[in-house]
Each structure stands twice: as structure tokens, then as C-alpha cells.
Length: 100
Image 1 (cartoon, one colour):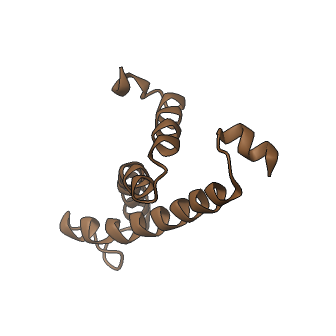
Image 2 (image 1 turned 120 degrees about the horizontal axis):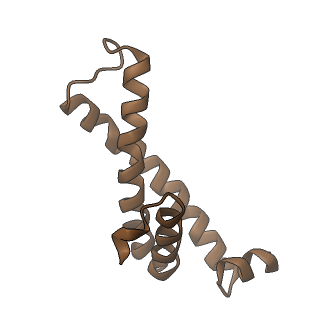
């Protein structure tokens, strides 16, 4: 646990638990929110070719997840950790220019 706390720049084991909870809640919420959006744009799992439906759904989940990660992290009092995590993730994807 000490290696993880040092790597993440956090102080307590409680913060690790909170961070894991935020990741879990965010993932679940992002997938739930993507469902009505896919329906709104006219993609239905039953009638749309899976080769179209799943890539579009995953592409929708990604930005929803990124936004929710910071918001839910803020609600749990871990805004700084998740803001830094978000910037690092987007830098790795080549989207770091969004923060400059």
C-alpha cells in the first residue's frame, strides 16, 4: 500500500478506498448514462449492427466517464487527485492541449 500511496501522492489508506469507490461508481454511472444517449441518437442494441453499435457506445462512454470521474471525485473530496489523473490521461492520449 505504501508504494501505491507514494505513486498516487496520497497520505492515507482511507484515500485509497475512496479513490477505488470513485472509479467503481464512475464506471457504472458512465455506462448507465450512455444507454439513453445511444437511444436518443437512434442506435438500438436489438436493431443496430453490433459492429456499429458497440464502437459508438464505447466512444460515447469515454467522454462521459472523463467528466464524471472529476465530478464524482469532487463529491468524494478527491478533486485534486482526479483532476491530475484526468490531465495525465488526456496527455497520454495526445489531448493535453485542452489544458493549456
